[in-house]
Amino acid sequence: RKEVEQDPGPFNVPEGATVAFNCTYSNSASQSFFWYRQDCRKEPKLLMSVYSSGNEDGRFTAQLNRASQYISLLIRDSKLSDSATYLCVVLSGGYQKVTFGTGTKLQVIP
Amino acid sequence: DAGVTQSPTHLIKTRGQQVTLRCSPKSGHDTVSWYQQALGQGPQFIFQYYEEEERQRGNFPDRFSGHQFPNYSSELNVNALLLGDSALYLCASSVRGKGGNQPQHFGDGTRLSIL
Image 1 (tube, one colour):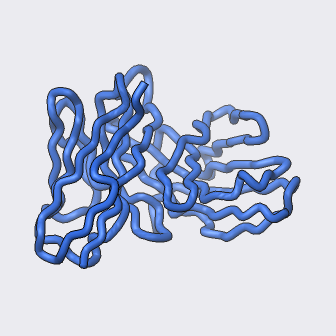
Image 2 (cartoon, chains in turn green, orange; image 1 turned 90 degrees about the vertical axis):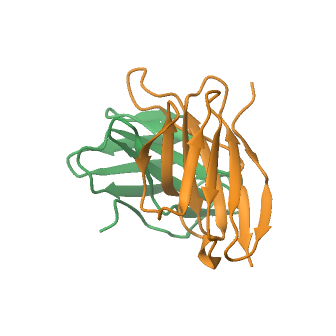
Image 3 (cartoon, chains in turn green, orange; image 1 turned 135 degrees about the vertical axis):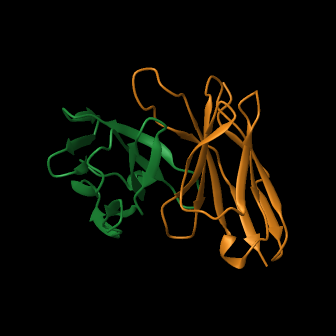
């Protein structure tokens, strides 16, 4: 089993739709979680951290479920500019061992 | 405030050669991590440097080595290049400690092609 797993997609959704991505992780001692966005042939960029209590940033909501070892990202009112690959990132250990998921590709269609 | 900078942006090498990639971290960051990203895959962790020492290492052979300098900049060296080493190499910097793991900031990457 991979340390961090994501559905690779692609998710094709119309503008204005709500879309949700999940990411599961295998190391129960994992400490920090993030969502990154990566555009084609560009570097990953931090979208948001994921906190235990859940957190929201505009149209984006991230949640963590430690018991079931998954994190989620919800995007409301999808825009064309949201089209990208969304990478889930899990950090473990004192020296921040970083594990990326393979990414979920989102295509927002006009 | 300069972000993470990497050089070169593109590089073409042949099998068996050696390559050195360079990274300057974001201002104020002291930890540098290197990743390899093959087409269609997520970044794979190579190793991380803090206080000029390798602190964590992913599942990469000894052909991959690195260094961190007193100014926190870092190099990634790959010896005996293989065709499979063709990928985007990403450098990320972060600040260690300060109450928890901090998110990493990425450079634009070096695209390495092996012929």
